[in-house]
Image 1 (cartoon, rainbow, N blue to C red):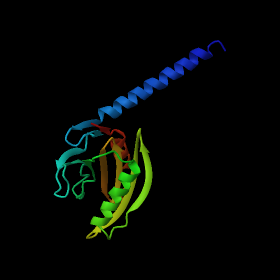
Image 2: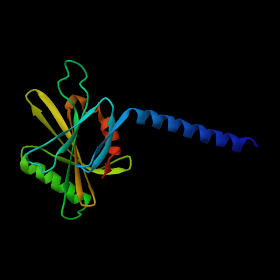
Image 3: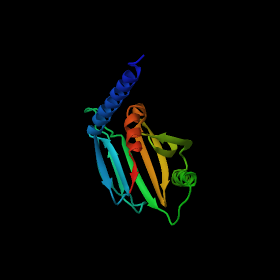
Image 4: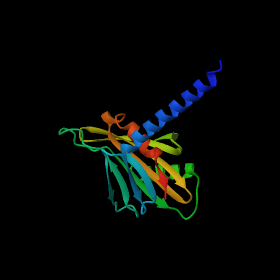
Length: 182
């Protein structure tokens, strides 16, 4: 019995070292994008790339994080696009989420958009929406996430080929977990 506290301490130290090594390995496989204009910082897998795009319907540029192509037959890069908008005042996360869904429905009346409620990734809480669509012979799905930070609204849209929907889910969760507003 006199060795029990020592064994307990040894167990705690060995677990924390293991966690530190796993966190270090995870950090080694990530790169960070610090995008001041988009008011965001994210970490994403080193095998992915990021770029900035514009949309004539949006006043701010969009940060796009793109998966690698798997092979020669792979013709679509799954992607997470991030858009922000500065509002004249702070509104609730749920109201911002509802306005994002309403805007999608107005611009795309034929889409069936599901409100999937709140999701937690790491320390971040998002409101999720979802829809599917087809383009020629390929089915796609879009998972959208919204959140408010002060008076800035953030929209994250993860688009993937339907057959790959679960394939990159962990990476997308990891990216969303790393979100830091600037």
